[in-house]
Amino acid sequence: MAQRFRIIDGYNLMHSVGYARERYGQGGLERSRNRLLRFLINRLDLEERRRTTIVFDARTIPFEGVREQKLEEMTILFNKAGSDADTLIEELILEHSAPKQLEIVSGDRRLQKAIKRRKGIAVESEDFARILRDRESVVPGSSQDSDLPPESKEKPESATPSQSDTEFWLGVFGEVNVSEEKSGTIQQKKPVDRNLPANWDAHVKKLIDDLGKDSSTEQ
Image (cartoon, rainbow, N blue to C red; front, side):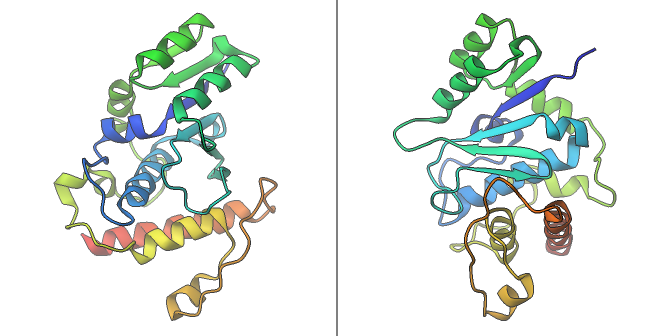
């Protein structure tokens, strides 16, 4: 049986998983997005991640001008100015070379109709979130508790992004020296392009491991 390709409506799934909020303080949206990505990394195996694209509305992006990146083999996309995530997902559906093997994860009726017109598969975000929550983590040593909805464990939202969130997004969208960041002497370099170096996965994995340690110490 052919492997499915998957496109996830990022903020729609964020609501279904329980990481979204009615209001966000400074850096709050980035933290929620961060949690969703960690949730997916913990529960999708390598082959699934290679065939997964997550699309976010670009209300805020970690670094201006960086609208596509790879994280643990998943593709992360932000829509361009003057457009929205739904429009971008519709374009991806129309352009896909094997739409019958394409799965769209979203509760948005517009997107569900768009994929069904091309004989693809529509999955409700609520159903997808439930399926993933029932899975065991595929990341050795990770804690399922670290992915509980914010209302079940999260401390009051800080007015500024946490150190772990800063490291996470700097690591995804620009090469940084984490030890320099911790010492307060960080110098942000140019955002990396799509052609990532061979050691990128190991670099990101270290950042994810660091984030897991941060999460365990906060509990």
